[in-house]
Length: 590
Ligand SMILES: [Zn+2]
Ligand SMILES: [Zn+2]
Image (cartoon, rainbow, N blue to C red; front, side, top):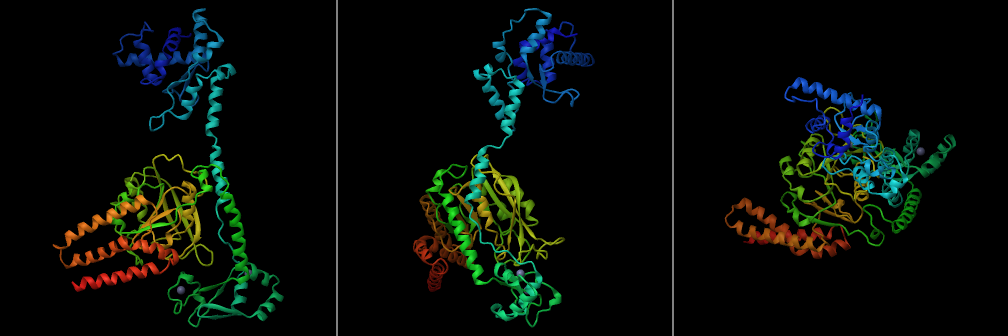
């Protein structure tokens, strides 16, 4: 038997039932129903046992209604799955009215044209964490006022499914972004490596090696080999071969040196090392092929079409040239730099190893005001072993959410993964970790292009793969401001700002940054000038050091820009060295 009073209650109160504060909560709906005086027989709410029984009856009545008109009431959970759902999310007033009319004929005048507005979609739309209604809910609310939909007469559920499917679909901007990345990412020169070990051993008997360099090949021996091994010469001319560099001290039974080409003791190390052999014609061909491919790719860059991160200005405007500031990151005022879309940080975590560069301790790193660098955007933080947890913690402290972790699989000179890693207590390390932190909700990020894996060769100690720059640039676009902290000279790159105590001098193109930087140096100078009179000898040497930095920063960098432009490697540095010398002399003369 249908409880017609309950039906009437739902029709008359559908708005209150679905909207906050009730939000369709079954228990609260029941309370409203009881207090609304629809049910005469429900009395004595105080007694717990009885009200429980009456709630059961209320639920049974609801089930009867659903049984009579299956789609009139919809719950958050599927009725088949949940024994008793907790929340009503949808009431179809139109079908409830039809049901009510069965008991009270012609109580409601029902015209099909008014049906759409009667069938009000739940105004309690699914909430996101931030409390903002989800897109689907907003769209459906808009559609309630859309005459076209009324005329089409699509059942509401069908419409909602259609919308959900549409929303689930990846927008074409993803597709476009990926395609653009595919057609505009420059290729890197690639020559395959020969996998036939016998080739290397044939070659080793027919080369002259002087001072760890291949001087010449005995072609007569190679031709002889070719007779027994057809394809040998073609292989030499199309692939890289690694020739064992056998020296008097080499003990072949020991196997490959785990450092290979990066071994520092090449003249005494007893393990096997290799020399790379690429015929010059092959090298030239690879150069030429890569250059022509990249030329074509560069012409693709000029096609102005819009993707996230790469506006059409991409085609006419080049990225800013590389900029850098030499500074002690721990004492630098990050406000000078302004805000960035992407930040890369490669801190020298204080792992207990003899590394050729200074390490900061963890407390110092955690204390860095990195939260000042971005309002929204992405940060890439290199971490090692124990520092992984610390890195995650730091990112949280700086206002980031860790959204990904990129692994860099390291390969060696021979193009193989490193199986004899130099670090690791239990298992040898042959990869490195890069945490990806996200701040805010940047809509401009170009998603779904790169993967969370980099496979590339190791270079100098602690030098990270350049592939990361590509990933960052594709995510944020070429014109986004990008910063690298703790960078070195080899890290400077167009479109990027690099800071660290190991870059050579300064180069700043952005006027506001330059001005703020000057002010910072001036203020620092002043404070130090007044401070030194009282201080002892120890801090005097600090002062001298400071003067050295300041001098580089103040007067010299303009000339340095010119010098660096003409000769990036040495000139700038020499001049600062001279300056240091003069300063030294001055200081000791006093
Ligand atoms: Zn070969
Ligand atoms: Zn070695």
